[in-house]
Image (cartoon, rainbow, N blue to C red; front, side, top):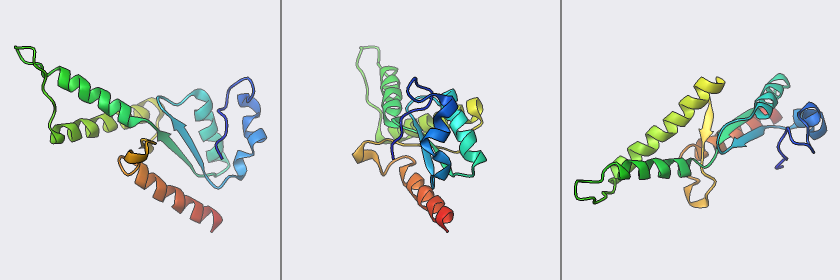
Length: 146
């Protein structure tokens, strides 16, 4: 199920877990496109307390990667004002560096060792961490139902 976010007027943080019955889920996936809020971090702590496997997911990494590529290409403007495009190898290096920066941010800022970086765009689902997220979710469900 896709549940509404916690910490809103209709779904206050104080009653969210009980109201949604989250402790009875096989797994939970917490998704953000920027940073995790206090409500999401509280939810992760409660899931951990009830021993419900959960996955922290950072979505829309393709947008961040493309933004970094554009910045890099803009820095390659030569003396004549001509822009240059990055090679595929350079683009891949920027993608790898961007994802590592995102993961480092979540590790340093929130103490999260495992954050899956994904893009929900259909053509990019095989990229980034989506395949490992799928495998890890299936494994967690198998263990929970064991």
